Length: 184
Image (tube, rainbow, N blue to C red; front, side, top):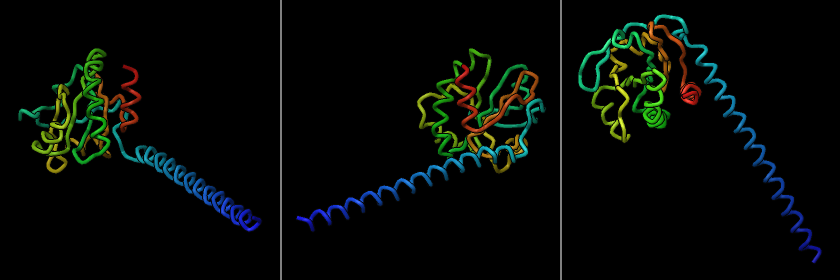
């Protein structure tokens, strides 16, 4: 009986130590992820982005219908360019959110516009996955179009909010979208 108690005590202490090691590993992982998130936010700060008050650069892009569009089309209204890519996992989450919020944004006088860095066919296939598509889409392939370069887009999803005079008002990644959309 005493040997059984000794063995069960040793096993119990083994389980306690194992749980302690698992807890330490979990804490370490959470801290690493928190640091990674903080680094990604600080990475945005490191980029040479368009600043609030700066004039939005002129651009040329194509609609899904093949029509050419420039910044002049959006002057006189508030527009939020939401830069997306078919290979971007957060974009797959953000596209339906933007589509759901488009009517609320319009009610606030803000036009939401997707800017795809993919070619026409890839963009069409990407957007087929989503039920609604009442948000205009501009095609500005990363290769061969200066839109993303001139707007200094560091990655996707990324957004720029442009005012009626064509000046940058705000910018950011998906967290900025959530902050702005929550105000609508």
